[in-house]
Amino acid sequence: MKESAAVFFKHLGFTYLGANLFSMQISLKKYTLPLKHTFRISRESHDFQNSLIVGLTHKGKVGYGEATSNPYYKITVESMIAEIMAIKNEIEIFDFDTPESFHKYLVEKGLTNFAICALDLAAHDLYGKLKDKPLYELWNTNTSSYPITNYTIGIAPIDIMVSKMKETPWPIYKIKLGTTEDVAIVRELRKYTNAIFRIDANCAWTAEETIYNAPILKDLGVEFLEQPLKADDWHGMEQVMRHTVLPVIADESCIVEEDVEKCGLHYNGINIKLTKCGGLTPALRMIKQGKEMGLKIMVGCMTESTVGISAIAQLLPQLDYVDMDGAMLLKKDIADGVVIKNDGKVLFPSIAGSGVTLN
Image (cartoon, rainbow, N blue to C red; front, side, top):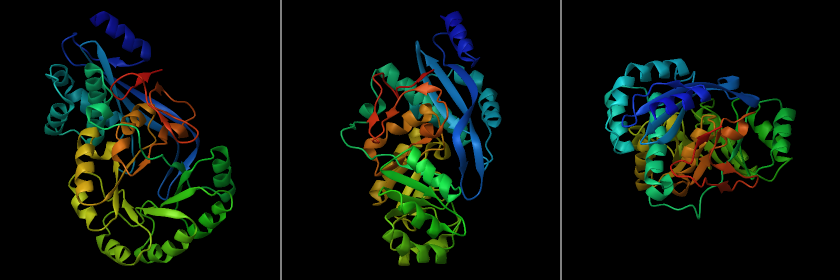
């Protein structure tokens, strides 16, 4: 079995680090994922996304997880691999029982949340496959009702933004802003679609701009604003919450579990990113805490492949909003799992866990 596993992972291009059938066998691979279009937000732009895929094998089952690099948080695939390699011998002999116990162990080892996320997603996928049930079922939720993902339109010249919408007709668009002509951009885009708009300024606005823009954007069919101010501008958000006519969702202000309580006093909702908080394990706790505080709950992506998107999809029944279009933005995907149809509906995999298999 050891030899067959090694051959299997070598065929996929992974670095195989396993020991034997009864240990936690681990594999790591860097992917460079090309995007369909240049993706630009207020602070950066890129044409590809570097991503780490982790495979965890136990008792003949393989679970997959993912975490992307991110310059804003100073995370690279190489840095995540180095972290994981530093404790790979300990991971191999870890007595895997539940994803929660594994996550606690990883936190105690001091890994970054991005590296923990890749391992945690793999552990959840593995656990579901061992139990032969999808994660949403293990969490006592069902997929009879769930929110539709938005499709993201990055900052670009107006004609390019319009062409992206025409290329992918969609019921909900997230529009990235952070220019000197933001309202004019939304006004122009509105001419070409009746879709719901969500606006994400990625920390580029001031409180005054947000309060001024909000009523105009509301009249243009905008549903909510996401992270208009800098992440630590809590005073500005107090002003926004007193005066804005649109709901505001925290993103960069809500990274880990400890941020939920403060965001509850300054925002109408939170956008949870699995890579930032450390995976599904803390995300589930953040969802529960946010709901108890009366916040709207959103989960967002970081342009992951279907590996990461399939993990997000398991949370759908618990969410008010979702941004899980990452794999849709890629020229070529690397995995099979959740499928998002042209109308936004989701086809869940027939296999258990997150339902992921690598191509």
